[in-house]
Amino acid sequence: MALKTLSAMNAAALDKDLMSIGAFSIDQLMELAGLSVSQAVYRVHPPKSGRRILVACGPGNNGGDGLVAARHLWHYGYKPTIYYPKQGKNDLYERLATQLKNLSIPFIEDFHSALKETDHVVDAIFGFSFSGEVREPFPAVITGLEKASVPVTSVDAPSSWNIESGPPSEGPGAEFVPEVLVSLTAPKPLVKWYTGRHFIGGRFVSPDLKEKYDLKLPEYEGIDQVVEVDGEGKVKSNI
Amino acid sequence: MALKTLSAMNAAALDKDLMSIGAFSIDQLMELAGLSVSQAVYRVHPPKSGRRILVACGPGNNGGDGLVAARHLWHYGYKPTIYYPKQGKNDLYERLATQLKNLSIPFIEDFHSALKETDHVVDAIFGFSFSGEVREPFPAVITGLEKASVPVTSVDAPSSWNIESGPPSEGPGAEFVPEVLVSLTAPKPLVKWYTGRHFIGGRFVSPDLKEKYDLKLPEYEGIDQVVEVDGEGKVKSNI
Image 1 (tube, one colour):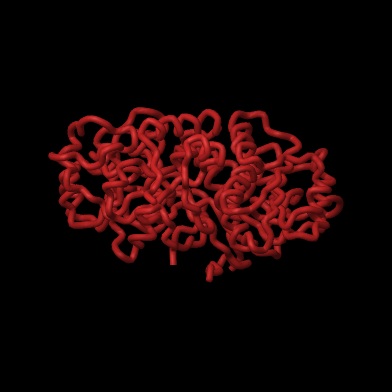
Image 2 (cartoon, rainbow over the protein chains, first blue to last red):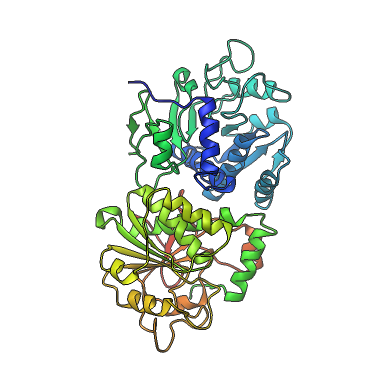
């Protein structure tokens, strides 16, 4: 049995439902999504494996999830650095960035230098709404992630991958396989091409929405905000 | 060395700072506060000790924290019931209540009957902005909590206690000592009179604000959103 997935179109519709029928604010959902990412990072790469973590953020909600994750990681004892070349202009992204600046977390401009001085990377560049081509300055960033000698955790999708059809056949990202993927709410079709450690995060979906989108989500354990699954969607226990 | 505390006036000022200088939205802070409460409940009373949990919510932010906690508790496998007799009219409280209704969590009107059919109670009636007298319908609710045969977890303050001077000398709450107290952000002066298990929650305070309010907060462990302390403010490890 393969893992059940949510198409890009349905992922967008579910997101909309969470904020209308579901009555969640984007602040709440992003807080819980970023918290999930931070817990997956902690589980796979605890601070004793290296405290320096470079968080690459894109201009949209995926980048916002990365900003939230960075804040939680700081509180866990990591030393985050943020690469955020196309800062989203909306009020929420600006506030999330200010929250990090208040922790004296540096925002850097030279991704490639920063990549040489980190122990882990979080890829929060593109999420489920990505399609088409990777715009500047991100092609070189994707190539950097692809060749990185440190582990990468991707948020919702390995950036540059097509949500439905997986890695691009050529160019930046064609060989990119992050060590860890955190699928938010539910896995997207691209997971068929993904071979690393796979977590599901976003513990806020109601039974009604699960039914509406025909989701078969694994059971979270205890108070965990993430759950690790194998290629068939079976839970890998946190022991 | 006694536990360092934050006066009611400074707690209000810190809350304001978190939302201005700190750039947090109330949605974010309430989400993290309620999450902290849910984690303390899980640590002390895991679902195997009884899944039924009655959450009593007041009209203000303390009640909002209770609504968030109830949602997380549902996701952990508890069966929450909500008593929310004076529902706050603002948009956030209404959305938090809808999020619970979407999980088919019942809202009940008869607190005393519900108290006979639960395994635990969360007291989210009054928080740090409480002062003066307990208004209807809460006096009888406080008396119910005081005499409850099941454990009570209070959010930020045992409801009816004066934030500075502790339990009232007579009337409802004079004998009320919840089994668990979760102080949000920092303990308030009332903890001097409190003898049960004590947690601190709200892992979002920046070093600048800690310094401004001269807070001596205990170190959280791992990814925990709560930390248990003894009467002197020393961490009691989660082992």
